[in-house]
Image (cartoon, rainbow, N blue to C red):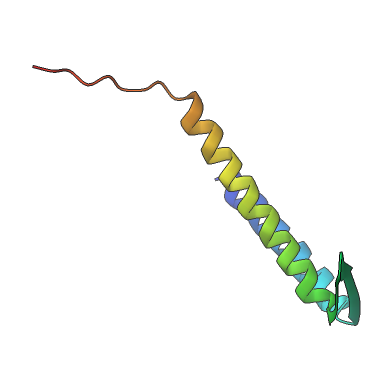
Length: 73
């Protein structure tokens, strides 16, 4: 239940911040350069962080769980 509340708070803060900062910005990465709304960039950054965090948590949870042994009856 705590996790749901934390996620809702983060979504609310990101939403308010994005709405207040919707100006276009120029993004430069290596050889790419493009213009996009700051709100979209922020949303995609938070989404990427969430996906990476959930993936890492799942990986470490699977790695640390005891493996079931198969019996050959």
